[in-house]
Image (tube, rainbow, N blue to C red; front, side):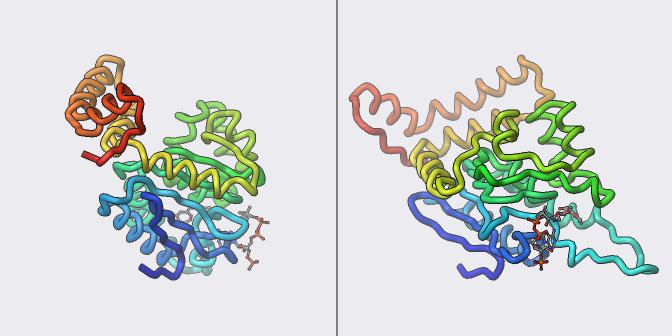
Length: 263
Ligand code: LHQ
């Protein structure tokens, strides 16, 4: 498949999507949204793809919405940004969360606005030491979108979520890792290799089990312990009936490397 605004590659059991508008720090246009949607759908459908890796080309990860598309002229009717979210951003965030495969995000540079929250919607986020996370919305008179108001308080707590969202100050990758916003901060020159290594490791693990783990951890945080215990029981029942579970146990007992088939 060839795209204009992303790169899409499949190797070693995982798909890599690289946002590819480096001259605009990979800011979102309608075309980028469309291509990203298509690529995620192909990764979802292909049973040989067991993980997804998302990153950006050039010195930025993603600067959020391309504001060139959003210039407003006096007298023009105000835009319906709710429609923009309904048609472009919300389906994207939902598709990543619902994808029954782990998504690794390698934040290679600045992640601002919807770009920052796109990263937070992924399952394991690595960031280059030079990367920055910016909840830029407040500077435009907007509300954090793309799941920002959901992810931020859950990941870093109410006080830090409000600080980040109201002030819009850049947060370093190192600090983001310290406060639990992301999984890990790695040296710039190691990011790509580390992210590929991680995606490869995930691709070699039992796919059904990983999909069920993602479902359990992403279950509504309003679940009380009883409801979550019931959910774990239901998911474990499914996991226990897979061939991969049997293979995992047998491989351990026979002291050999397991080979998982996704069944
Ligand atoms: C850009 C952008 C950009 C266009 C850098 N657009 N060109 C949802 C619903 C609908 C509407 C509104 O939005 C949303 C969600 C959102 O995402 S709102 C938040 C939108 N994003 C921002 O407000 C971030 C704007 N960008 C910045 O503040 C800076 O560019 C950051 C801090 C990201 C990076 O700063 P620098 O490293 O100093 O780079 P730069 O500013 O020089 O940018 C490099 C180029 O990229 C430059 O183009 P040029 O032709 O002058 O070289 C920028 O204009 C362009 N660029 N972000 N969002």
